[in-house]
Amino acid sequence: MPIIEVRPIPVEDTYAIRRQVLWPDDPPETIHRPGDTSVGTLHVGGFWEGQLVSIATVIRDAPPETQHSTAWRLRAVATLPEFQGRRIGKAVIGRCIEYAIQQGGTLLWCNARPDAVSFYERLGFQIEGDLHAGLGHGPRYFMWRLLVAG
Image 1: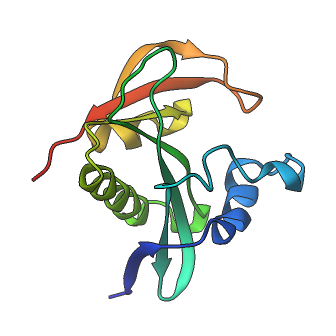
Image 2: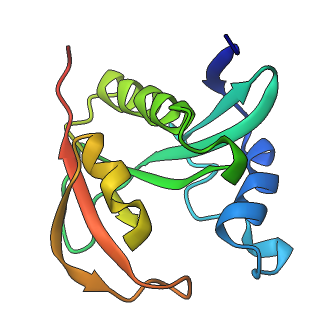
Image 3: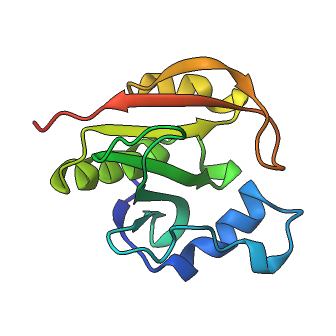
């Protein structure tokens, strides 16, 4: 049975997977995103037999047009294609959820690509609203879930 490890990582360790999976056409200087170095931001890596294969970032951030002070945003979620379907991404997001709850978070939200909606739904997220234009990276759905300590 392969060994899967999930742990915090430095933001710089997310860049290679962000570039390869999420934003291959973006200039290198744009791989760093707003909030990446904010106080409280957590970058999580999923390792398959020691190799970093999955990433996610969670930052304290209210959804657009709200003042939700206990909301957290999930962003830059990616798993290398050859490792998808092995529950690594689920474990990485699970760690992000645990962290947000530990920080007093009550809501987690993200902008999901249409092909990732079912993945997020399996993790308890729901769509709100219609498909909207992404910021240069294609259309997205606003998705959210409540966070409950447990």
